[in-house]
Image (cartoon, rainbow, N blue to C red; front, top):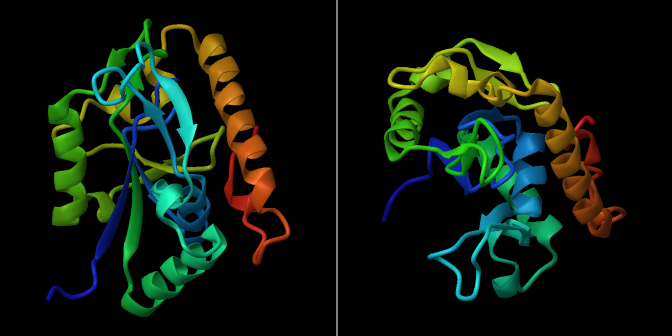
Length: 193
């Protein structure tokens, strides 16, 4: 039996191209993103899907939850605190634009992000705060193009990025409304736009 993890990695496939390839989450942000369970259904992995569709599934597996999602998020935070674990959001989706405009994150980029998490480079990196989601984004990571790390920098049309980030942020906010009044208030850890 394994021990407790040093790093917890949430995988998402952002079809809007506005989430960074990797971001370090505070315990509150880990709870928020765990409850949100955001990803996109993509062709080839979902029957009947021809273009990516945003999907929110509490705790990345709502159909299998026996308790309310906030209970699992509270347990996650407790275990992270007890064992000093770090949480990360890794985006395997698009960069430089939404689906149809941007490019899918390369396997090499994702692998470099995961390697940096596991070998400790990501934890020691310098960070900047993402304006739209409040995420901590590393400035540099070994093997990752620096312009990809901050998703706004990867978009040629910065206004289009801002509009798209606001659209996805609105989806997060709308999805999270169903969890308001259930335990601790986590809305402060969600999008800022």
